[in-house]
Amino acid sequence: MSFIAYVLPVLWLIAGVLALSFVIRPNPRLPIVATRGRALGVLGGVIAVAVVVGLAMPKKAAAPALGAAPPVRTTPLVADVEAVRAHPETYLTLESVTSFHKSDGSVLLTGAVVNNTVLPIRAPALSCKMAQGAAAAGTVSAMIQDTVPSGGRLIFAAINMGKATGPWDRQACTITGATAG
Image (cartoon, rainbow, N blue to C red; front, side, top):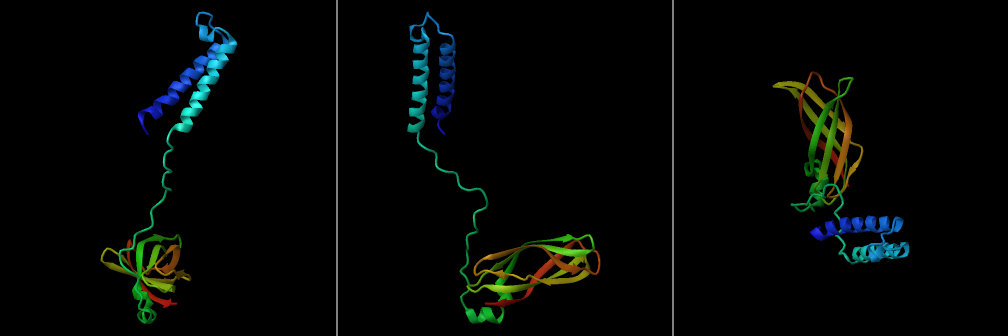
């Protein structure tokens, strides 16, 4: 916003308060506000000028909506339908996968599955190798009973993967199966 856009409302507020004070208590030494009628006219003029200036000011462009912009696809979608139907899991990718310890010892998984094909892919199966340091803590797996839209993503939260065989602090997850179409 320009400097004048900040200054005008402050000046209008000061002029309006002064004009209102002269309506309440006219000043005979100042001819323009010597009577209540003249002071009301000045107050009306200040308000009219403020309205005209407010309407004449250029409108600010609407701010863009908050939230993340959709990601820009940098690779084209795979259009080979036969290859996708043969091995749909190879065309899915995992993003932002995070695991949590559930109170009963189960592994909860949160993240997103991205579909890079022109076909929707149903029921992706996830498998995670759990580990603590260099020691393996077993493998947990689960199937997401939902469909990943064509060229889209499926966000999943708190998928119960089952219990790991030992304590763990990290995971390596893959998509082991899915159904195309």
